[in-house]
Image (cartoon, rainbow, N blue to C red; front, side, top):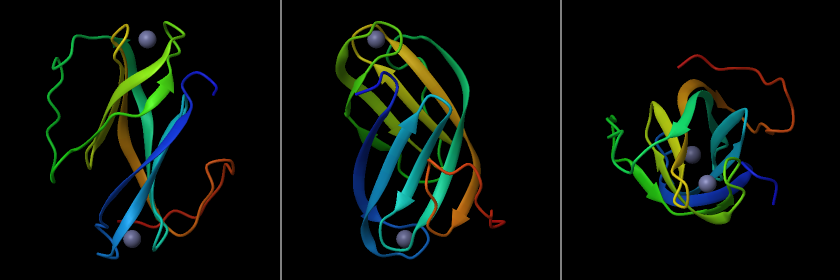
Length: 128
Ligand SMILES: [Zn+2]
Ligand SMILES: [Zn+2]
C-alpha cells in the first residue's frame, strides 16, 4: 500500500439514487472520492490542508450524519501502516493517522453523476 493511498467503503442509502448501496471511498494525496456503487454518483474532495492535530480538534459540521470509519492505511507523515480515523461529511472529508495525529483535510469540490475513474483526469462534471 502506498502511503496516503487507500480505499474503503461504507454502506448507506445513497443521497442520489436512494438505494441502499456501498459507497466506495478512494483516497490519494491529491484527491478523495466517494462513489456510489449503484448509480455511479461521485463526489470529489480536494485537499485543503494537512497538519498534526489532536483528536477532536476539528468537529465536523455537516448537512447529514457524518460517516465515521476506521480504515487501515499507510501514513505519509510517520510511515506507519495503521488505523486512521476517517470522517466523511457532505462538505468535508478528514483522514487522521491514529499513530502520529497527521490529519488531511479535504473539502468538497464537485460532483459527477456518472461512472468516473480516479485514474482519469477528465470527467464531465454535472452541476448540482
Ligand atoms: Zn447512488
Ligand atoms: Zn502517522
